[in-house]
Length: 249
Image 1: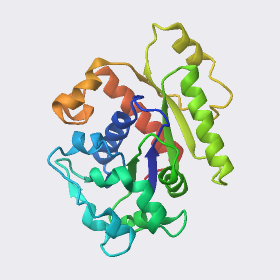
Image 2: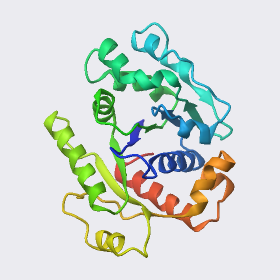
Image 3: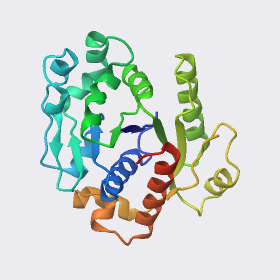
């Protein structure tokens, strides 16, 4: 089993859309996939199964009183299951600090899912926190969507420094450009001449496309309701590259 996370220090960069669409594409390719929505906003779970609700048992699970499998919910999509977020996740950092027994706590929670799933996809909140540290320690790869701008690159460098300072390394970080507007000169410049710090920049990129916002109206992943849209093919290219880089099978 592989575990990947979609993460960015900044919000509003297309993180959840990328996470949901890649999870759907993974499941559609035949991989048993679990999507864990760690973001208190809960948008990822809402896209996948709007009727699913969290159990509110995360503290009991951290204390070992409830099996982590109790969190799993079904989605309408074959081979794709969900752990939805709930309001308790707004205090998840505090709960982890209080009940965790080291930086492998999240990794130990994820480990049992290896019996049933080939892939776990984490959608993470935008913060540098104890939860972020746990995510970085638990994952095989961290996918970082970046709008092509100087501020986005700066936030990526901050994440790299955070990981390095805590002995987590940063080799599993994979940035990719998202919400790209090819009409904007800065976007074109950064795409054509990416900064040196973006060493593992993926070649696939996601353009700005209004149809992505319709995921909220449709309450579905983009490939489920617009399989032939050009941006759907871009998400498919992104997933294909992730699959090869992380050696997911």
